[in-house]
Image (cartoon, rainbow, N blue to C red; front, side):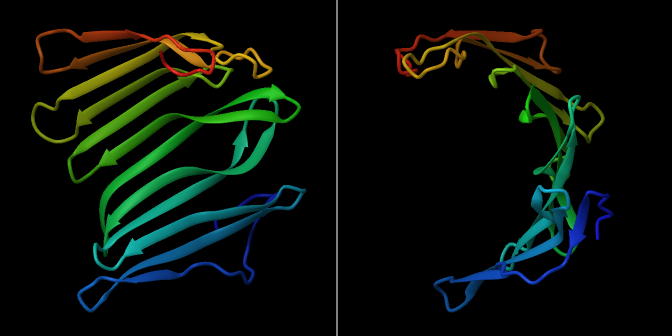
Length: 220
């Protein structure tokens, strides 16, 4: 098991799952994709089946294995919630060379009465093949609209590692869709992109784009 704590338990019971898929490769053989599952979980106080704690897929031609691990317990200021979200993704060249690893962190907007909106606020990807670390930080307002995304890539090898950053800001949201029964802002009127690079003399480069929409929310 994975050490789940009450009210979540790891379970083992018979069920039908795909173990492999094979397709003709056109040259007398087969391409086979294999699947593996670990740590099935259930919530013992009403939430029921929470899915697998880990899911792996690998291909016999590429020898690439991708494993996703899931987090099912999420704690907010108003309560604790149980549902699966991808925690980590690891890509391995079999039998054991790790090519990359991605870790996600989530924020949960809570609206009361068990209404929530989870989103990824930080993703860190370590690419061991290209020797880079890419970090993406995102902010989303309570309407569910993205406000800022900052993407930073850092070289993790070499004597003078380079850092490149792109920050995208989404501002002046409006309710561009009329007649749908709500007034929730849903379209940004301006998107500003600022790029910086550590080995360039220019401090940064910024570009802003303004948008107009018709009453169906389409660009005009």
